[in-house]
Every structure is written in structure tokens, then in C-alpha cells.
Image (cartoon, rainbow, N blue to C red; front, side):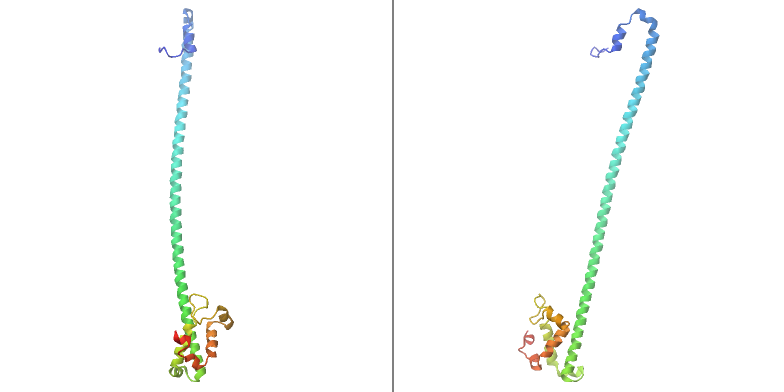
Length: 203
């Protein structure tokens, strides 16, 4: 026996046994055997508990890894969806801008046509003949009116304004640009309209 091993109460008790204890030796052995079985059972239960704990820890670790992997996949899906939504929104904005640009061009063409029609009406009022004849007789006046239209283009105070551009208030009070031009052009005499020194014919 290892001399460093502390003496238990059992060892101390065994050392106190005498020859008179031999008659009860079978009882002592049975008691030791029973205690041994109890200790073995406790050991099995301890090992089983340790195994269960290790299994639970392994499962918890595996569940945590699964949860982390799922969170990563969900984040990737969310990122992909957000990117796809952003691309859709960008494409829609692009299409809307193209539609708006096309409509603006269409409005410009419509306004030009209305101005041309109004110009022909003005010429017809001046000469009292058909538009076709008017154009032939009034090429100079037609050119002056085109120059005047360019000269008065835009809104005064804005970057796209010509030197003779009206204010928005003037346009509103006249009922729009076409009406404003009609009124302003009608005020001028033929000489004033075709005057080569007029600002619209000089620019």
C-alpha cells in the first residue's frame, strides 16, 4: 500500500480487528461487497451523467452552428433581395424618366405646331388670304416671327430664358405662352416686326 495514501476509517477499523472477529468475517465481506456494488452503481450513474452532459453540450454547439449558418443564409438572401429590389426600382425610374422625356418632347412638338398654326392665323389676319399665299408673300415676317419666338423663349430669371422672355406672371395673366406671344406680336407694327435692328432679328 502506498505510504502516502491517507488511512481511511475502514483501514483503521480493519487494523483493530482481532482473532475474535474471524467468526464475523463473512458479515464483514458481505458488507464490503454491498458497499462495492453501491459505489459501482454511483460510478455508472456519474459516467452516464457526464456522457449526457457532453451529449447536450455537443447538441447545443451543433444547434448554435446551425442557427449561425441559417442567420448567414438569411442575411445573404435579404441582401440579394434588397439588391434585386434596388435594380427593379432603378429600372422603373429609368423607364419613368424615358416616358417623361418622351412626353416632354411630344409637348414641345405640340407647342411648336400650335405656334405655327397661330402664326398662320396671324398672317391670315394681316393679309386676308390663304396661309399658302401668306407664306409666299410674308417670308420676311415669318422669319421675324420665328426669331421673335426664339428670342422670347424660356421664363425670365431662369437659365433657359432668352433676352425677351416673359415672367411666369405675365404668361399666367395672358393665358399661356402662345396667347402671350399672340398679344405681344399683335402690338407690333409690320415695320417693327421686320426691323433688322430689332433685338429678335439681331441675335
